[in-house]
Amino acid sequence: MEITKAVALLERALDDIPRLKKLSSHNQEFPLWDERVRGILAEAFGPRSNEYARFDGIIILKRVETSEEKQQAYVDHVSQREAALKDIVHQCSSMVGARVVGPSMAPKAFIAQGGESSALSKMKDFLDSLGVEPLVVEKQSSEDRSVNTNVEHYLKQADCAIVLATKGDIDGQTGEFLPRGNILVEIGRCQERFRGKTIYLLELGAKFPSNISEKVRERFTQDNMEDAFVKVAKELRAFGIIRTGKPDK
Image (cartoon, rainbow, N blue to C red):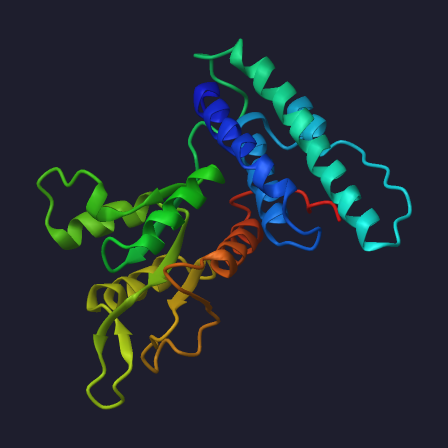
């Protein structure tokens, strides 16, 4: 990953700090943010780099009992992360244009999806923040390939697959929504190519056909992708595609 990209992603993460400080100490957004930043640092510098260690740090928390003390401890924790991140960004800014230690190419995730949607846009941004390149076939060059050949071309480049099953056709028998037909076709291809490395996300109000319904999946809505992001991050870590430490508690 080029330093320019790493700096841009880290600066975007810093923009989230003021909002995170206002949240409850029990919120789920800060652990996701923390994991996202670790992913960027690991991809750009490596999980054993000085930059990663500086962000990871050693935090000594005093005993807290009241809700006010817990909230203050949380704010202090966020502030410590902020200070470390600002220091890293400042040092990186002097190295813009260089290339940092890390994989020569970012890992790629093929996204089986049913077309433009708010959920797809959010998923692409989330993967990008983790240092994982989202592969959406419709957004890639086709170079005069047929539709099927083009899909296969990008499947070969990917390290895993994410099934983003949004609502499509209505089942004439049950009246429930099914994913669009192209998603079902691409699921078969993903299962064949990425055994054990396919993540299933299903929009609330839709259902998978019986031959897919046994798969473990996470539900999402166009407005709320939080549980889906947690699922994706956990699976990518289990696949070995991203390597991050556990967020501090």
